[in-house]
Length: 252
Image (cartoon, rainbow, N blue to C red):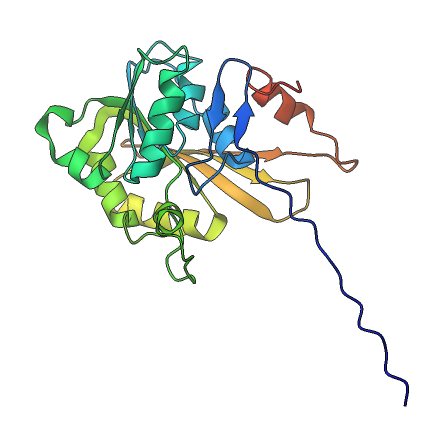
């Protein structure tokens, strides 16, 4: 009997980029578990900064969203990050940028940050790309678990912190997958934090939902739905995506 040869397949694993260069700043990410993602860039570009004088970024990671917002507003921005490595990365990224006088980074949990009386109800805009896995297998890396899982920041704690920190007419913008977005919305409405706008993100028309960005406020009103397709049927970036990111991406 002739034995069949064993064929070995080798997959080349490309190293992750240690930094991303945008038009007005650079994000180094070699010390953080969570890297620059397209959905986070959409969050930073989409979030409205109109009339915002004081902004809070919850779970800033590398500082990406905070700097994207700083590029479009003169508002003072506070950025909170619980993971020490991510905090150091965000701090260094911001200190090397033109926004170092505009953004303050705090190495603490949002629960602790919200308890301080001087922070009460002062933010016109709060934005977050929070951990969202509630019942999933975990990574062996603690910092990645903190970034992805709700153990260190439950949805309940996030809503309570937002309600404590948000000004009466302020807005809260959050990025989540579809199912988690539905769960978070139900919880928020039960706490009298209501959706005002939703942006559904898909890779292309007809594909599954990648993420939903929801803008909340404390007034109960009708909300508007929008969709964003990243690429068209030919795998080219759509006009809407290019228009949204043209002030940031070097390729546009």
